[in-house]
Image (cartoon, rainbow over all chains, first blue to last red; front, side, top):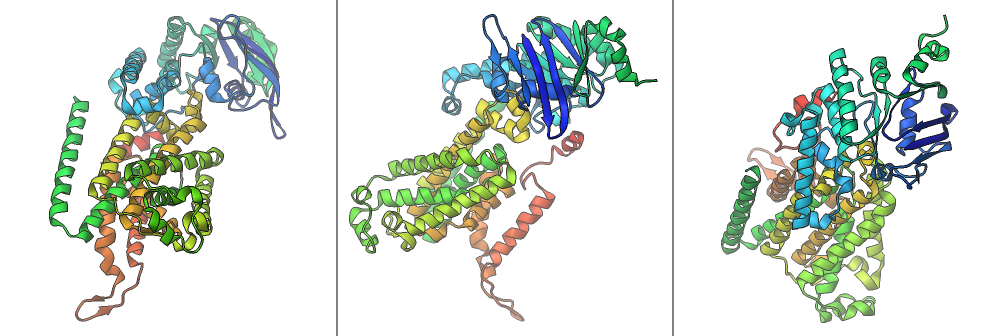
Length: 256
Length: 339
């Protein structure tokens, strides 16, 4: 689904990420972990086109026989190809309603042009009705249907995170990038989140690449884990392999 | 149900305005009718600027430029052929315009389209800029238009301006266009594209990550806004009958900005009300520019005093009520939760 080859990202003299290679296979949940400042979010930003990498290639295979080089594409093009993300510090459309946030996630799949939306010709009206129904379904899925008319910024933090996921799902992604979905959640919420991620993966036939600090979450749901430290890949493998890896333990706990 | 209520209110407002205009035309004098006309034109201008500045979140100050383009287009297209010869005594008009004379509606449409085309042309390079840089660039554009129009003698008659533009604009035209604009902007904003505009305003990075092509949507919003600014400029030209490049200075843009800010960024009803109130106040407060005799004391008139008052109001609104004067304070706790 996604292959990252020798990715290097420098900001001036700072190397945020150096010769990082990784692969995410179709239908997998893959984790990306590492201490703070390890360059995890930078990897996401490069995949989604926010940054252009100093070196390296990223290939995306949304379906068999179709390959896209993501480097050099703009974020909106990448989203249209089927990669969508959530943000570490939520980035909702704060002044807009909860429903509108999800509605906007559908915009990239809209077929009607702008004049038909102003004139509300039947084909547009039909499309809009479908988008509303789909958005309401997604809100129900995340349990926010009763808050649909609230301002997104007025929601508590946990709900905002879920809303971001619903918005990302509305774009109909093949690959979903989750940047610390469990940040700031209590153990109960974290457990619910783990179930939720697995549920949407099945229902929407997703491949998921996630950054997470909560080890329980990553270890439980990831099939494969990549560990970054100071921009360098220090370990990769199954959760149990990674857990036993000396370098990983050192990176997290420091040398004694 | 909500939808129905909204439609009913809109219809009520429409019928009310038609009735009011009918009565006004019957009973009011020319001066007051002119203010009504100006109000309608400012409604269009306010909404057009709000589309860029309020809904799409781009800080653009190029409105006077687009209005100038629209005004000159309508002036040159509707002016009778002998009148053109009289206007252009200094240097004859370019041959391809000399024998053109068309009706008001097509002229307005052409004005809007040329203005929108220019909007796209100017938007393509400058819309990549952010916030204050965009404001400076669009301001520069408006000034360039003014200077160009002052110097293209055979096209715009230069600093002499155009005189004797037929007065087609009446209350039906100015308010008819205002209602079309209200309708257009409301439907645009409620649709998927309008929501995408607002998404860009809220968070560009997130909007782009959701697959919204920033550049395309910004240009789109800019093109619509410049279309309506051009049409409004055309209405103004035909209302005044005389235009010259110096009418389209930054102060004109400032007046529209005043309406947009008082009415509330991203508010349609607020903008409409503010447009009417500001236009009426501009006239009503004229006494401030003249000397005032309070009986025991004589205050000397200072020309421009009105604008000082308006500027103070603007500052107060920006400091105290950024949501605009008409907005109910629903979102205070919301903006608190955001931080």
